[in-house]
Length: 391
Image 1 (cartoon, rainbow, N blue to C red):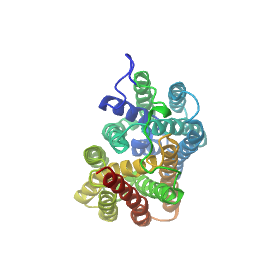
Image 2 (image 1 turned 90 degrees about the vertical axis):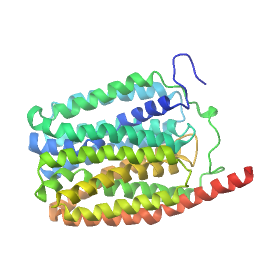
Image 3 (image 1 turned 60 degrees about the horizontal axis):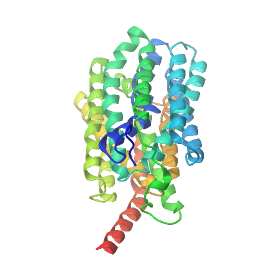
Image 4 (image 1 turned 180 degrees about the vertical axis):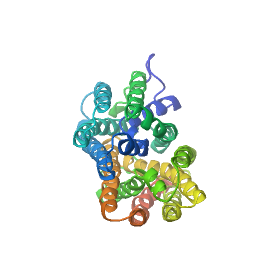
């Protein structure tokens, strides 16, 4: 149902605005290399402290995303989203003045709780829109497009203007998302169709999907948070690394676009299997980062496949119900993975080298590759049954 002051509920503009809303709660993840590098270079944080700031921020988001599972079906979601956006801007403003590692961890942890709740709410609303994979494709399109700008232009600003430049960019994004919020429809639960999977939630395939999301995000973020320092350790310069990361993030637009075009036209199993395999191969290639061409190619390929795979994985979680609770639970698994990656990296780097970290990430991706086959094949089979029944 569309009012005179809102956009078409199933239209492209609405999907883009929902993508901005979901991105606002976690946009710092898309510029995480810039934040980690800025904390090390501008504030003198150690590698471990900088990585733990990232982990606190995203673990807070995981707590918020889990809380969203229990509150999303209660009342109107739009006033809650508005309050959360104001809270995010407040904590980003406070972060501009913090110079102590422990205080920064606490502030970013509370920021993460608000951001994770917002993402959980947004994911639940996205689950109420038809062609959920397509909407997640728009989400990744926004994240990787703007994230590319962030990792390209923000790292050089941090040594000059300090971390304030990083947190101001987050405040600006939240402000834009707040304006868009007023134009979105209500998306009431009672107005949406029944879920694809039907009946009671099937917990075994859902848990497999959630574990796949966790492993995929942990493996990728564990490397991505330190990718600037990783490149430097192999002798690459910041002047080469920053544009490379910007291009790789923009390459993610290709992955997001492919999700929008494909949706479930070719099912879920084969696209995910191929894309996750490519992610694994690109990760292993980081062992040869001393070569600029290898570092460039590996990051660009991961940019494409990261956007592609996570859109499908989150879409799979969302298809287990249309109230939005399972989509919010998928958000919780995603945030937990994103937080665990930098934490594991901080522990590995305290006693090892980037070679060990790359191997750990590759093992996690291999686990994701095999575990995700169960829920994807189940949903593909159900789709085929529905199509045969209709025909």
